[in-house]
Amino acid sequence: MKFIGEIQNVSYNGLWLIRSETAPGIGLNVFNQQKQKVGRIVNIIGPVSRPYVLVRPARSKDPQLQIIGERLYILDDARIENQVKSGRKGKKNRKMR
Image (cartoon, rainbow, N blue to C red; front, top):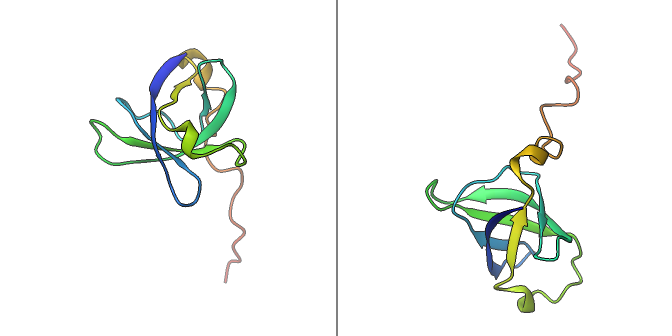
């Protein structure tokens, strides 16, 4: 498992803000030290050198403020390919005039 960072803050809509050394892919599952899935990456913001990663928690009923400082991880590169959604699933239906 690859370390992505510690939870810095919790946003008003319940997303976790993590300061990361690298920019992982959007849509990847996030795990805690016990290798339990705790959420999914929904957005990456900030500078490229040290981006912020926004994670939607898997369970929104967890105590939000007690989780600040928890170390989070993603799976190694070999397993990432199976989690990332690729491309669009269908074409738009457009009528030709």
